[in-house]
Length: 593
Image 1 (cartoon, rainbow, N blue to C red):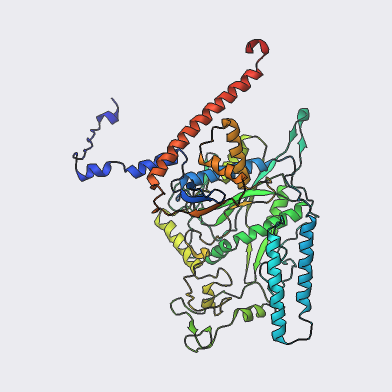
Image 2: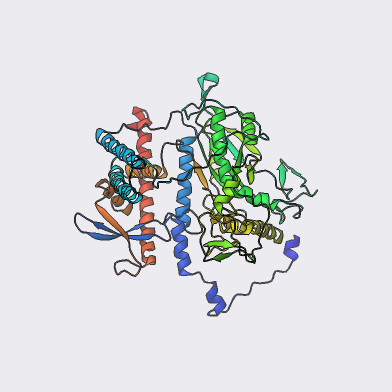
């Protein structure tokens, strides 16, 4: 008899039938409906749109998914978006042909409009040199601007992509910075960039062609030693503190010495990490000599510092990648913000007469943003901060291998979660580290228009009344971002030659081909068929839940779940039928008979 059988077991006391405890244990009907919708991939908060046919006057209510990218808002839509990203990375990672699409030449009608637009621009500039009064010049310039706006609307209706000129005319002098590299950064090799986007192919044994690619991870430099769990096979390496931590230890990611941890540099690196990534890819293409393509995502480490995983098409030497990482930096040309001039509880106040923020004691106006930038024009001026990359890890990935699929899912594993969800603090030490970093972010400037500039004695760009330093509404200062405000998913323009809408359309075409008309009664099929009749035929508007022709959300979810179950059953039957037909054609004629 085992020891477990000797231990007496205490029976679990069941609540009295009909009691409040018994009622609270029963599952909620709405939770069951939401769980069933999530299991079948049905959007739990669809949008009801009223579609009006301008040709026939017919009005009907159609539903579209909410399209949320975070699982906390809508798990089915977020998971659908993640699978679409997986498909996008898979199709563009090991391409053998160039995905670029060459644009068509503009027609003569388009060139005629551009020619007239050039004449108007010439006439507008010539008005500045003709002798006339300021009022007459302003009136004639306004007339030319009106003609230019009318012509721009005509150009927008043509097949031209993009804009001929910026949307807003900015006549302020542009500040120029020197492009000379810093003396404390290593030099980079500079090669002419070849327009190709496909990596090299290598010939192996028996004439087999290998087209490897790479998986690269970019991290920031160290801001101080932190508690970590390092496993090298079956051996767990000791931490900086001298102990060996488990994979779920409560102190992982926290500083070994919080007093010496550089929280200011950690916050500034998080704010400018997106700019450093842009500079990194510029340097990669210049040093590699060809248009390197990438697809990846940004995540948070346990120490709450952002890092990025990228799938790179083609291969590059690891030594070159490390050299590029060491030479990549981003200079922040802002006024100095090393020390706080005013505390958060006693900031500068707004003076209505001077239309500026003034010192609360002397009533002297603060330095304007233009004056602060003029001071940076001095020859001995230095940038306010220089953001750099830290460590880089790179490994080769073979096409069609298990590592390729594993790497794709590794890159996209957190795209359905918020940036801080996977690094959410659990222990008191992790919460204190999180709060300390967020407190540092709350008083740092995030942009030229940030209200925190008042704490450093500088008026923000475009200053106005009502600014509260320490409570800027920018995303940098939010607890859900911890300083990073760039795009979570980064995909180069020539990665697969398709957008997410193109991949989504390809999937629908494949499903319609398999079903051979089985989707004729689904809203997705109706929506796609209607788009072929012309994009201007239908007018859409958001329907309100209280409208009499809009059913309750629960009824709509039940119908959507039933339609999805029937649709999947038809799809599985069609796929089995197609597979059986293909296998029958592959058999020998005698066996098929």
